[in-house]
Length: 66
Figure 1 (spheres, rainbow, N blue to C red):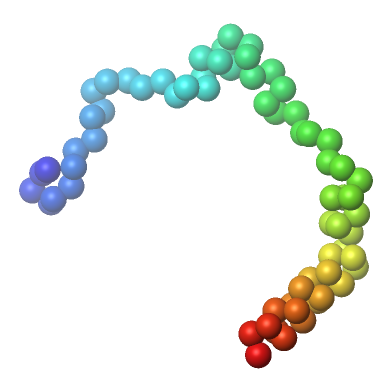
Figure 2 (cartoon, rainbow, N blue to C red):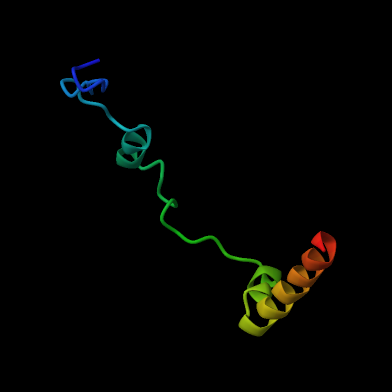
């Protein structure tokens, strides 16, 4: 601990993140690709359906906590 009561950071030694070497070896080829989302999850993200479901959710919890 130094005079300002902070622990000093060890800046002298270099550190390598775990996934860096995997990326360089080609192990993480599909890490940047988007996974396909199911039809049901896409439907739930439609604006008016999402608003209706959130209103139902809000009503249930307002009844529960009142």
